[in-house]
Image 1 (spheres, rainbow, N blue to C red):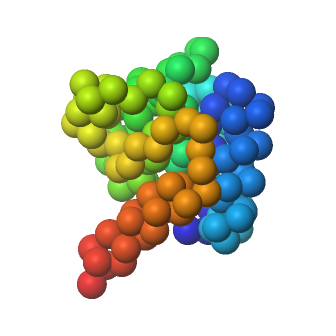
Image 2 (image 1 turned 135 degrees about the vertical axis):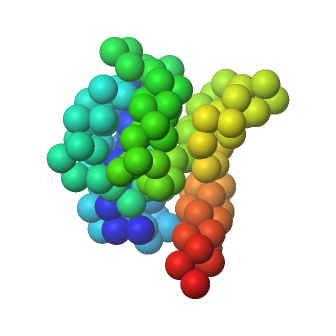
Length: 129
């Protein structure tokens, strides 16, 4: 996964996610967005290989952003990892139904993020065969 978009309204959370991605050796090009709308604008310019997104953001929240991505035939195949501190069973179920590929709880730990990225990478490789 060469191009990754990290979407979170918290600069600190974005920085932590970028450090985690760098520590596990993925993302030659990591871009950052502060909210879902900014992310959609960036995705329209250049679609990433992976999106990491928070749920609670101003302007356009993570759930609405995922809904718009998964409704677009050109973008539907982009894997999305949601990173959030609020991931109860009902929320997890809802996010899976909306097309989220993986869920990681905050605070983000490199091993958990690495496992999520590796699972997505393996699934993509299997689909390509």
